[in-house]
Image (cartoon, rainbow, N blue to C red):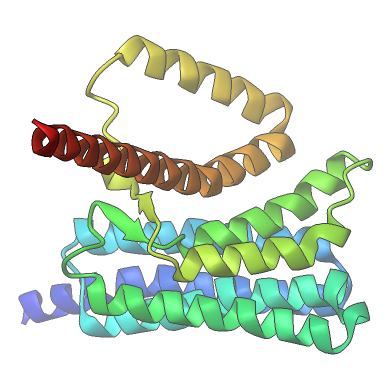
Length: 252
């Protein structure tokens, strides 16, 4: 009897964090409808924190289940798909009429496709790296722009919102690889450089929080593109060298 009760508590705990994630997404939409985009952006940031915690708690308590996976995806769709879409539509897309609606649709459906792909590959290929940019990271970049502009008034990103949202939609459904937190092992090489980087990042976070948040999400988005371009260039160079070697061999 005790074991059954304990098992129920284990499964309830991660789902409570998922519910908090869901609540933050709903709250963000309400704030966006009120025109309070700054606090709406912070609400989806809070949703990201709860989304991270529910996964960690589920693993620590061994409370993972198919129900939890599905519930987490539904919550993520609300917080990282619908909430930022409404936020950006009201802030920057509504004046574009049909084009704005189309961009909002493309972004939100890309989130849905990304989450669906994650669900079918979560047991195998997405443990050490993500295929496509994760939806929380894409949402975080959009939210960080609003937070950044609140501190630095000269930053006017609104005209670029359509391009940014389409770019993020592409990154989410692409095959570009992005690292997971579990794959970032700080115990490996060059511990001093990691320590120095953490100290600098902490200093920037304390004194320029808004800028720090934007840099983190932008760097993550750019990292996948830069790495993919680098691997593509290396692959092309390898094939070119291989072809030249074959040509020289045939000439001999």
